[in-house]
Amino acid sequence: MHKMKESKILYLKRISKLFSINYYIELIALISITIISIVLGRVMDAAALGIYSLVLMTATLFRMVAESGYDYEILTEIPTNHDKVYPLMLESQKSKNFILTATLPLMLIYFYFSVGDLVCLLVIPYNYLASVTYNFKTVLRALNELKRLSKVESIYSITLLITAIPIILITKSIFFLFLIYIMLEFLKIILLKNAIGKTQNIRSPKIYELLTLSMNKAEIIQISKSFILRKDFVLLNLNTVLQNRIAFYVLGIIGTSSEKGIYTAAYRFISFVRSIPWALLSILLPDFSEKIKKGEQIELKNGLVVVAFIGGLVSFPMWYLSDFMIAITFKFGIASDILKILSWSFIPIMLNTVMESFLVANGNKVSVNIAMLISIIFSFFSSMILYSYISVYGIAYSYLLSEILLFVIYFIVYQRSKRK
Image (cartoon, rainbow, N blue to C red):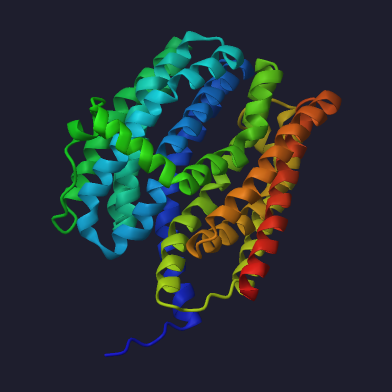
């Protein structure tokens, strides 16, 4: 029996429903992290907040490199073939563990020049655990088990808040805060593993299988070959993180600890609202992939107008209320001026999310990587140049301009793909 084509109204309703659930998952996690950042900044100082943020952001960069595109594959393959859950999870985690280990010296070198604090060593075990967590979360999204995922995130976030805040208040130490993160990541893995086990009796790897670091020569060779074959996805993950944070990584080398903390205070609000496009990407990528595989046409014009409008609804209040928002949270006065600049980046960020989802699903990964690489190079050099003239304000302007540049390039690629 031929399935009727979904109307635009029904499509928008379905996407809106999925988005609301998916966004809630991102929101509850971000609320806890944001509260912890605010408490840390107020109890300690801007320098401590800068170190804490730089360590976590750098760890994320190397974790996303290790991801090597498996998250995209899981989101596009598992929805139509649940039998791939076990082999894909095991294969991806073995690969990620190897890459995390291989790139560890590079991460430590960057920490030596940017942080110079032994507390950064605690992020090493945390990164392995967080990688496993991300694996489970991606699978649950691919299985469309968003309610189970939101329940786990809620439990984790509440537990994190009631343990981390007292630790900060009592010890005034980032070291003990990272210990809390490590212990609770174990809890999160157990909860996520249990959630998948309750999903249609789907089999997933045991936790010890995912955490093993032992590999023979043949497995290492196979991972290396797979890494090369998946270079487009590897670059996609790396470029995505660098596109968002290259300006801050530059600041990590050339700026002071206080400037890092001030920029972090402002950027924390951008990170908070970035959960909206991330939730949108998690929905649109598998949805676009499925439609393209079925040969359906996708028109982005209306979608771009809608997300641009949503971006404006977020950007304007954030710009207008920046002084108030910083005053009631971090109390780093100059951070409000940084937030005024960063706030307008949310409009191109929303547009880029829709464009990237379509282009990746449409098989234009090389073009997406080239576009992001151009934007990254621009952001790298503009950050250094503008910083030398207007200090930390230059980092914020560089971030904004790089997002605008990325949208311009994406739009050109999209127009060319339509003509083919």
